[in-house]
Image (cartoon, each protein chain N blue to C red):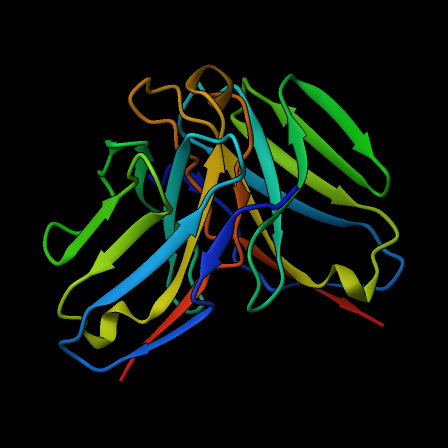
Length: 113
Length: 117
């Protein structure tokens, strides 16, 4: 089982729709969870962080965390063509010797105008 | 307040040459992480360094790759005798002290695109 699993996509949604991106992780001790956006040829950019169960909203973005199910998701409301990118999920590790983030392989989102 | 600075942005090497990639962390950050991203793939952790100390190199290939973060100057990722399979984007990220690292996100530099011909 991979440490972090994401559907590679592409996930195609029409402009104005809600895009739902999902991520499961294997480390039950993970405490913090980050979503990064990466445009083609660019570096990853942090867009959301979530630390406790439930929802966290920031503008058009909502992160949802369910630690019991080891599941974290990102919702993008009113999707725009500029949201077209790859979205990377990254939980922290509970292994004290490992402080680097492990990234999922990412979900490619395409927002159709 | 400059972010993580990486150079060069693009690097072309012939097979068998050496590649040196540099990373200057955010001012005041004492921890550096290197990741590699092959075309159409995710970010793979390579190495985590503190100044003058390698903390975790579990993602580093055993041969040809080395990393350092000296007391003064940038962190260096060195690839000896490059092969075509080393062609990738190499990203560096930095973070502050260990106590703050655990729950802190990483902020990345713009990366170095290495092409081996």
